[in-house]
Amino acid sequence: METPLLYRQLQDQLSQWVQPKDQRHLQGFAEIVAAILQSGEACLGRWIPYLSHRDCQARAHRGRLSYVLHNEQITAARYYEPMLRQALSAFAGEAVLLTLDTSMLWDQFCLIEVCFVWGGRSFTLAQVVLEHGSATVGFEQYKSVLERAQAVLPPKVQVTLLADRGFDHGDLMRWLNQQQWNWAIRVKSDLLLTTPNGRTQSVASYFPPPGKAYLVGPVRVLGDIDAHLATANVPGAQDTWAVLSNQAVSLQTFALYGQRFGGIEHHFKDYKSAALNVLDSGLRDAAVLTRLFMLLDCADLIARLLGMMLVKAGQRTRLDWHGDRGLSFLQLGLRELARLCYERLPLPILQALPKCNPPPACASQSKRDALDCRIEFSRVVSFSF
Image (cartoon, rainbow, N blue to C red; front, top):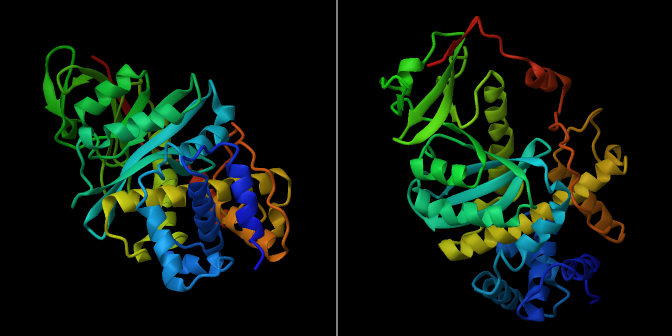
């Protein structure tokens, strides 16, 4: 049969940025990315119907797919990072927001990612899968992920990194300070703070009563790290919030840190139940899973760019029935791609992301009102030493 249009066009566009060691690798890469985009799945068996232009049986297809996933030449540095640099080219010199987090797979593997927050969601800058039975990892296990994320960022960006509890590591904070990155990290209650007058207390000592917030600083943590602390006891929240930052804190510190939830949490959900069903892949090898996630990230980025371009062209309502954008850029892109394939229309030239950060998608006005609602505190207390 004729070579599929999407596969041919992806290979043509990706060849502008990707420099493979062997051109056959680029062919296999483009075929897999096209199959992921059309199937919406991370399971190898679900890709096979989109490889039928090759006159092979299913077992042969499976062997070819397995070869790519086990091929050490198929790396993020060679395939995904050139695409990222093109997509992020407009952000040179801009302020950007990154998130660092982990997600468990089958209680056996730990996915570590640094993601770029944009449009109310996030997408991967760098990742690795470790065979590790806990979501808690040490700095040395994710330092290389941070370094790879830093390498793909445009020049002169002003970075702020957000991270959850479990990343309150002194080595991480020192590394961030050395790179001149800002940071806001949610910390555990037993972390010790030392005030300029030499008094040492735990973070829990600065937990406020319900409905109140405390702004504390400057303080020193972990021996030599200068920081500021913001704590809040919000009615209805499971835990008291405690956010440590290298910047002076205010009530906006909580709004800043809150962007982590809309960013990386939904991104991990897209990997699993919301879009790609990676838990159905059946793969149980850390290096192979790392390569699989890289392929998923390539497809994810292409779909987001298509979704962004659809909105930019004023054609969102063709696929999204909400008054305002109710679908993520990923979902919009996947639906637009399905329409293009169904009508056998050409894939548009992929554009870079605009540096403006659009608001997150909301499926209903009530949800938008809830997002826009400002939490009110009965009292805000600042502690200066």
